[in-house]
Amino acid sequence: MTTVRVVVGGAVCERGRLLAARRSAPPALAGRWELPGGKVEDDETPQQALERELREELGVEAAALERIPGEWVLRPGYVLQVWTARLVSGVPRPLEDHDELRWLLPGEENQVDWLDQDRPAVAEAMRRLAATAGATGVRP
Image 1 (cartoon, rainbow, N blue to C red):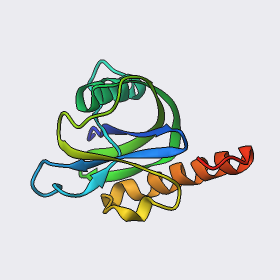
Image 2: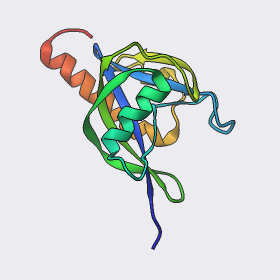
Image 3: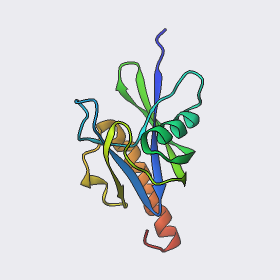
Image 4: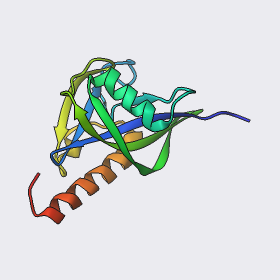
């Protein structure tokens, strides 16, 4: 029986925007954009892993909120699960594996070259942001 490792990504949302992170490593992924996150360790829940990864990669405290439905194969033995997250404290900055961050409003998601596996979760996160903005009648 093969074990599948879960990698978590964070759809970090603030003020109606989604945080995108540009990979700086490994070379095969450098220059492409993703939802920040990383591997779930054996002693962690996916939510705990996401909060740890956002602390390590972006220097922020964040709270994992709700899982976006679906999971996507990254490579054999690894799947991506994405959770929405909100910032608790700190200002995101690229500390590990990223060289640039960008906040994107709904409709701006195609301004960056997302990793293929992140695209469905990004589309759902943007749909939710747009629906929230529409429900409040306020432009983000």
